[in-house]
Length: 381
Image (cartoon, rainbow, N blue to C red; front, top):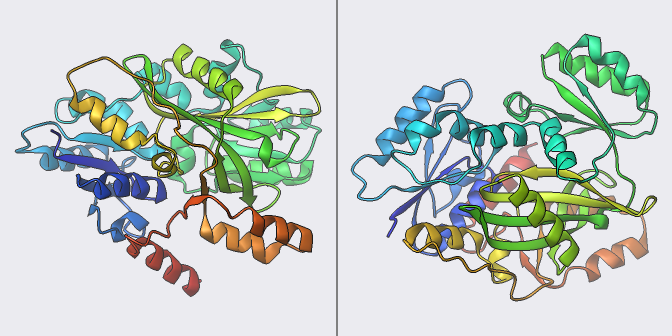
């Protein structure tokens, strides 16, 4: 039996994975370079303030070597963010001697950590992608004038560089002037990016295929549908629902297997009603924000990973949801949506949608420390 799981990155995603393991009685160690992250306040995680995974890679390796010493078996090692995934990618050879972890091979992961690289993977696999422009330096700025359909979303191309600068998840620009303003600011920081035309249609047209792939075979899979986001109309998901959707399952499975995305992955597609086509949006080769919801629909990805790595057998049975319609909600985001709504009908529809909620994000009655800490910090702001 593995006696410990080590999670790199203690933002919400890492916290939720730690809670899943901790509630199952498994010892969890978590490492992050930012003590404000909610995982530091969880009773299920032995949190350690560690070196920055970008600027102090070798120091982080030394810390992981120290943490793995005197272990009878290799602990499971899980990266919960792109920064730590990039760290694992560059230090995989030395860390494989001390830990067990499954991530895509180096070349695949390098593409996944690049937004344009993901689009290349998608198009080479036969999927449609949104129109986009890659901007790496000032000479690329004239290319932006090609984009005429606004609003436009700006995202980091190299995700490691983007996240190292602690930039917003994305920027929405509404005209050519605003787009060039954001572009010049990013290039001033030497941050490459892509400018992408937004896909038409409501947030409910966004679906994500969640998978756990080990040794080239899908071990677990499920589909979630985005229901709401904040800010409206463009923002981060505040409510999602586990749904049956064979078409998304088939597309997601094909993308993961064709591109050899080992380990955890989360791949998003969106339906464009104006063209009647599905478009690839993005993929993440790690655990995702709503990972705790998988337990409520009968496919606990965290434990499936743990149990499969603990077995010598390589016989896989694909696990799929035993029940659907379970929902995850970001309480803070939904409270802001309620605050911002100006329509009685919209308010009523929001309230009526609060059925079958199985996970309230940071609000966990068994582990209130992270919620209290974040609530306190938000009140101070």
